[in-house]
Image (cartoon, rainbow, N blue to C red; front, side, top):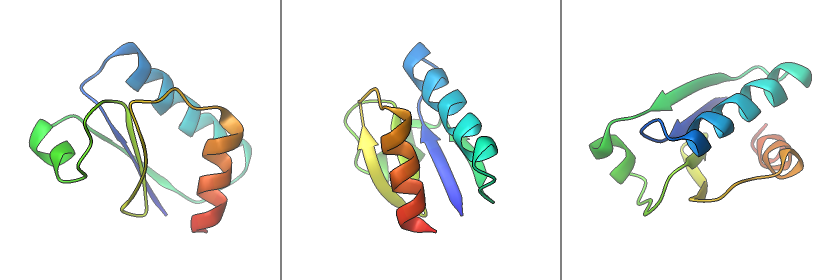
Length: 79
């Protein structure tokens, strides 16, 4: 599983990255987490606001602050 956090480094982007790392670790999910900071790379996913969350190349959210339960549900959908 590949999880990408799209963002240039704002506080919400850092928070999402930390949330995802904790969720993956606490649930023993085999996943690679990648931080995408390049604007051109982010635009490939069609996001208009950061942070963006991409799981297995599927955009799950853009510009939102997410609850842990929602992130975990999306990850489980992609397992």
